[in-house]
Image 1 (cartoon, rainbow, N blue to C red):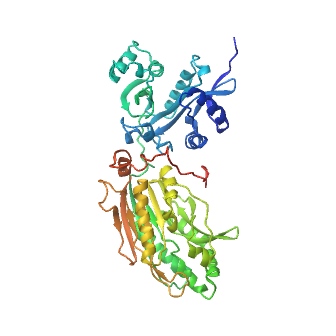
Image 2 (image 1 turned 90 degrees about the vertical axis):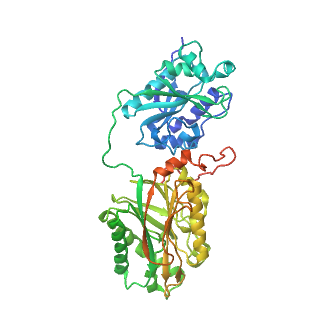
Image 3 (image 1 turned 180 degrees about the vertical axis):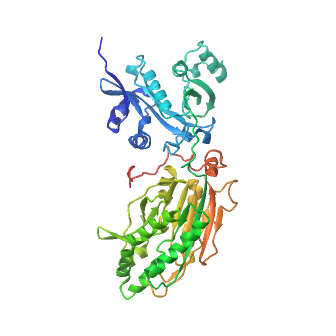
Length: 510
């Protein structure tokens, strides 16, 4: 008898090619397998939930899972919905259910109870993480043989009573799972199951509900948008005084986020107006690190997350347009403008950055795109696939036509990506600053377009070309409802079989 060394271990990316080989054998009739980038994403967001079985040091099967807030989905969902169209944006470390998205054993190794071992480890993980249950959509591959004479209900009941054998459901029932519901169109294309699936559940009897009193993600989020008046300031301290005035005002209304415009501190270039525009903007870059430190101080002092608009910065000899997300807990993260306008390039010699990411905050995931970047829809779609709920757009436009481009593209991004979009710009004139002499802005918060939102998709907007603050509340729970029950579902209904966005940004980026 052959000696077998059997191990149940956490999957590693180094195991990918063995995993792919085993999966192709397990699903030979479909020729399907998990792409490497999807496995990388799972290992990034939830490494402990990805388990494999090795026989003689070779991967022969696996069990993949995510954690979800099951209240968001309920029992009526599809595989695409529960996985966020395979992006796993639905994974929620604060969720209550371990959701099984894959389990298989290579055919050559079936009959050795390896799948049972995987299920047992999954149960242990569920208990260790104090999750309420394990839930999964299970195929019923033998149903096609009985569909002419049995309804799905009759088929399930006979499998339960062991009058009918189903290779998947019989195994799941024998491992302590029960059928919670029958789902139609759970995974379209499963011909053997006739597109049906059994929603199965294993309850963790040791589950202890925990009321989290501190640190919960907020569903109602207050935004403070600063529509900044360009004016002459006598010195840097005067600019800082005006910054603190607005932070104080917005935080007085308990704003969770405070958004400043792009290049709001451009008046500081007046001192260098005798220089060429390219040299003057590089002088402005000297203030960037000092302003960053000031904003970090204010974020802590006024208990608000501050998005600092944008500022020029020199890195490796290149002039970039960057900004900072200053969390109220003292942490700071950077964002960069990826696409510079022809005027920024020609007048200032500015280059585009290369940093795109979502930011985890105490109010959920957000994205930040500087001005022109919002006119490139691929960027916000990448962020939406990572779970972005609010997109912030600091902008600077000189004419009404330039503003209209930012405005209309921002409104489109809100609809396309089922998110809120907040834009903030500057107003007024700077007669002593080349290339920043006139401004036009109307700051606003835009919403998706459906019954739960304003009829014109405008949550609130400022008076045009007037210095002011705009305080706006947004309800993130409305986005959850839209995603699963909206009149249209632009994220869910994408034809990934026909097109996709190739994300060249690394998964781990800072």
